[in-house]
Image (cartoon, rainbow, N blue to C red; front, side, top):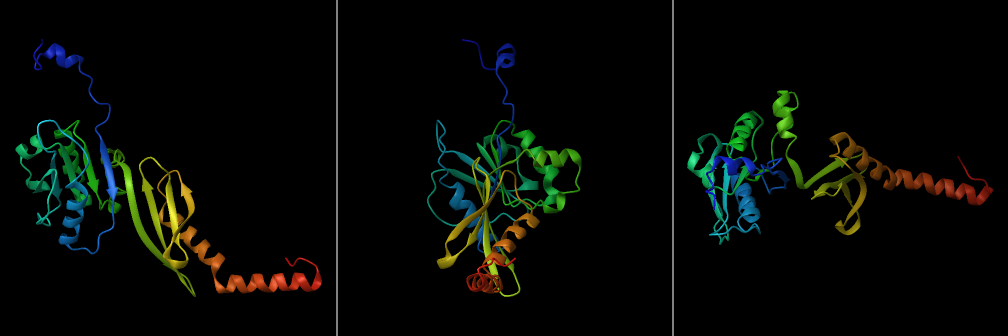
Length: 236
């Protein structure tokens, strides 16, 4: 057998075309670190992935202060560290690296970490990258390499006489779907997008739903239907 450190053998090993990079967007109860750390623990502590020789080692990198995880049993080995203080040993021993709510000014550091753990999967949870639209072209392209695999973001718009709650949802490779809250708090799918809808597009969908169900619109429709039944002519 050839040793694994044989240069000739390493040259024949296929390098992954793309490092697995995933983006997950989940709502938290509030802006406190406790809420976010509880969410991270709930999502990653029992992530259903397996590794030969022991539990999966998950390294969570925080933008500033390292939180204390909620207590509970875990099938995976979860380690916390601050992004700009992470040690090489932690990176080399991790099987999965998670960036929790990274800030826009940390994108270059995130890129360096991803290069350092190349071929290992990395996950970004609730990134704060909105202000990075005008960033360096290379880094903007790097951010675009993260595939959104799950997103569940609630929102609300207010009209003159009513308000409407909705949800922007995506799971796996499915389309982006906009759900609107209807009677009894149920969610109804009203629109789909192949790409992530902009805030303006989401607002337009919700406002259209509000307009179609508003008391004013219903009153106008009632008057038109009444005029049609009396005159026999459809009002324009």
